[in-house]
Length: 310
Image (cartoon, rainbow, N blue to C red; front, side, top):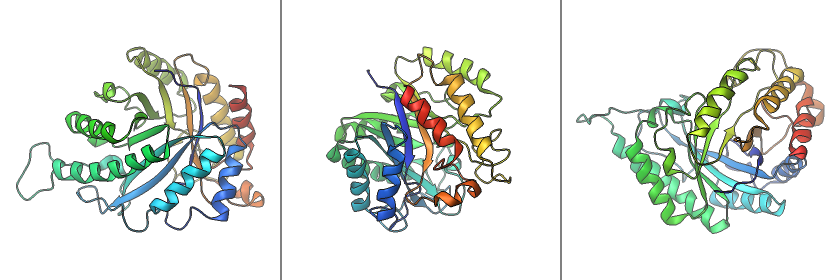
């Protein structure tokens, strides 16, 4: 399929109710658009209680309301951006969603894959219908759900159901290092992963990913990648809790190396950078902010220069 280079940014995470459809959110998205982005992943999280829970709560707080989701999509489109709608499930107890897991053989009185996928399918289809109704160009059916990746049959059934209600581009965002472990890439239209790779490992990863991409006749891009502006983070860009002093240079170095190593490869289709919150810190706070957002940091100029060059 034909896909233009994705010069994207993830917006709005984690999608806490009441933080979208505000003056601050309006300002945030307008500032994001100034970096030359042409896509945004509107991302938000529903909750299940823990990794072995089988019920996903997407109707009540703290997740954003449907009205807030509609507002965000409309705002992005008014700014001329293409939209990937990205509903995600998190665990309320703080465990990373990659650890959502159940027995492969059903055991009486134990939680089961079929119950979890039933709830997850209801959750995903709800937002797939919104993506269809609002003309979102892409829909992401899941994010970094490593232990679920082996359940190929259930994912294929889910994606088939999504196609019954959504006619746009479908992708799945696998986790870092998992690109070659997913066996059902044929079920999606575009392959995407989280490219949180240490700054000194890009040559090795590019070699692996080039060979991987060559085996699949479809576009491949990073649905997530980024680096906190924090000392040490360029070596562990996926570790948002890493302790270290604020460092805009560390973040900027990561982006410069990543763009240089993979950004212009002919088989690579771009980035959905992580991330841009609905409420920005002030310009005066930028130097002391050590999170992923690059608003008013050194890396913002690097990102803008790269995106405007593509």
